[in-house]
Length: 272
Image 1 (cartoon, rainbow, N blue to C red):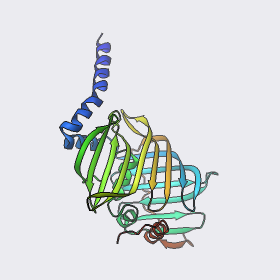
Image 2: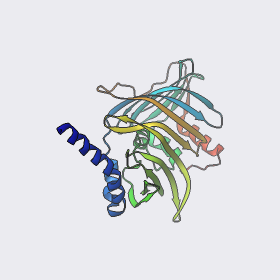
Image 3: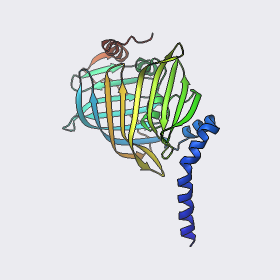
Image 4: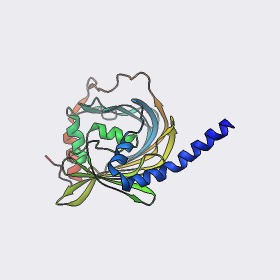
């Protein structure tokens, strides 16, 4: 009998939670956004996934893995279809470097914020990448403009730095965003998006949820990246993998300059 009561109580709470969240969207928008940002996510995570990249000079699908350590460290290892190394990308929160095995080129990004700034007009940083990869709202310091309900989703508008705005549609059943747009804001009107992310499927993880299917569009460089996650695992010990060193004999290029050139090829003029 006690077991049955506990099960019924859990079902009642689970069934009422989305409705309560939706009511909060109109009654207490600041409290709701604060609650959404308090999602329980482990300090360090490891994930295995397939990745499909579409861009002006790059098309393909392959496998990859990554290690994340909040708030601002990550390492992404992309492999060829033959399971040989293809690309490393890593950041310790201060610098962000990349290395491509095919052409043995080391891309230096000594200022990680500048690197990300080339993709987001200076609004986002490395912590925002990790937040979006794990299904959370980016720009943690952004101010709440409005919260409402749209098609059973919670619609959130946030005012960010550098004349940016975040539009997000959050699923109250999972606390994950369904769609996030980071856009420019000029003269009171929304401009073109810098980053668009969509979560089309989610998986259970430690009593909560993490993305299973994630699509990210980067219009400033003409890329679309689709991630299909196989596994998420919490790490008890964080490996020392967040700083890349240039291998002997590698060619060096500037990561910021490369991104700026790609943006200009898309007709985008990056902000200084």
